[in-house]
Length: 417
Image (cartoon, rainbow, N blue to C red; front, side, top):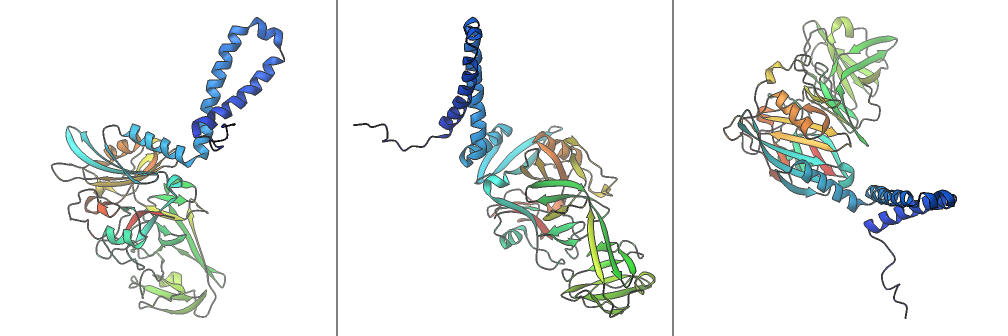
């Protein structure tokens, strides 16, 4: 009785890798057979070369299998994380997600660092900014924000105005620009297949009856009385007070609804423009109006954007541009939060404890060097200080000064698709 078929006819990863190598090697042997005289004369050299080729192709075969097999990709991911953090405590979170806890010493003083490293494709995960609520002027704890989207990991996000919770700087969620840039600070663009980092500026305008008005920002605090600002329903029910000599224009469903000097109600299907009368009085009630909003860089396929600042790592090099982004107030040794990514598009989230004896915090340059040391090719600083808080599977894993972390405007959340 033939028993050779008693084993199911499939191979494991090593066997398939060997088979791929062997088939490739057979093609080499076929070519060598066409030159028998040369083979006989150089038999020893050929045998050595053949063995080397076979070994090489088994390796190539395994690389192919690692790309095709989720199990082998996961094994490779797990090993690379263990190798990267040999003295750290490494915890499994989900497939393709690791939580790492490590204490480093800077100038002889301890710093506790929590890291989340994730291969989003391996874990079938998404990363995005999440607001505290549907309105911008809200604050919630990170547990509440993470709970909205059943997130497995969350890290505090961009800067925000403490009195109101309104984010400061570029924030886009699901393709909708919630707030515009502040001082063209650096932001992370999140795409379907990866990330990009750049300083972001706004290019927005409205056009009505041949008149064009530049829009200087969206849902942001006013920095100059001469600016024209646009407020959407996410801002609230009504626009803020007009600046001196100011004017307002209400737009509903692509048509100017009303104009005036006092704060106007924001239509659910539109927006309100607020700025100098000298710029806005050319827009008249009843006219059709078209809004055009672009960012520079024009990330056409971007899904989400979250800003921070300054840069930490740019194109593989430490790059901290505090002065250019008007962030002098956040220098010094502090609790820190950061986000970055590696050359192979792994996501890196970092929370650094500070302002205590057991963890003194990091300067921006120290944080930048650390982000580079763990493989980030690009990375940016997020809001830090009292805002720094990291959440992993229902628990706060760092040690913020306020138990559970202060209420936040927004967070970066990692969730299953």
